[in-house]
Structures are given as structure tokens and as C-alpha cells.
Amino acid sequence: MSSTYHIGLLLLRLGFSAMMLTHGIPKLINLVQGNLDFGDPIGNGNTLSLVLTVIGEAICPLLIIIGYKTRIAAIPTIITMGVAAFIVHAADPIATKEKALLYLIAFIVIALTGAGKHSVDRR
Image (cartoon, rainbow, N blue to C red; front, side, top):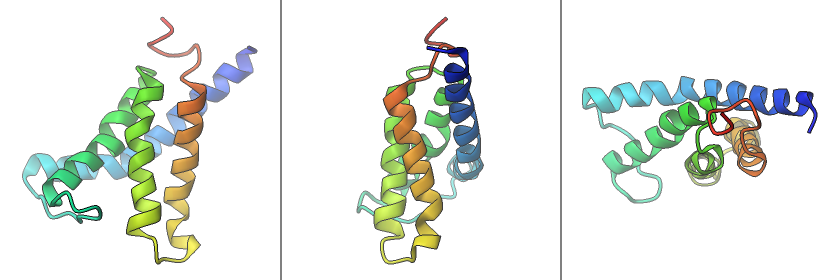
């Protein structure tokens, strides 16, 4: 594989995961502070839904940034974005669910391609 391919994978991982953290870190802060006011889109309860979302939007993107178990780490984020796009925003227009769909597609690509050579897993 060419070096530009691996740079492309690195940029994909860093860019989308860093942007995802802007959604996940506020939720992580709420969880740590005990503010468990969160939606329950799939019937797991508010607290469990928040914990699962924090895993998908904060913990796993951090793992993806460093390239540790990238393909596995992308799975919770894919599930989280699938729930956001197809359950939480199911009745909304495409413009509302567009961000979740873009993240979904990006993390599916990350899961399919892996981290590339610029990652903890490759060291």
C-alpha cells in the first residue's frame, strides 16, 4: 500500500473521531457529574443509554484516534450512529439526520479498512 493510503486512513480516523469527541465529551462530563437526564431510544433505561452513548461517542473514538483495536472500537460508534439516524431521528428530514449518517458511513469505512500503519496496533 502506498504511504498516501495510510495517511488517508490516519486523517479519516483522526478527523471523524475528533469531531465525534465534541459530542461524546459533554455526555461523559454529564455522566461523571451524575446528570443522567438522557433519552432512552431503545428501551434500556436512561442511565444505560447514556453509558452506551458515552462508550460510542467518547471512549471508542479515543481508541480509534490512537489506532488501538480500531476495527472493534468502531463497532459501538457505528451502532450509536445507527440508533441516532434510524431511531432517534427516524421521522426527521434528511437534513436533521445527515450528521449521524455521515458519521455512520465514516466509521463503517474505518471498521472495514482498519487503522493503517500509523497506529498503536502496527507498532
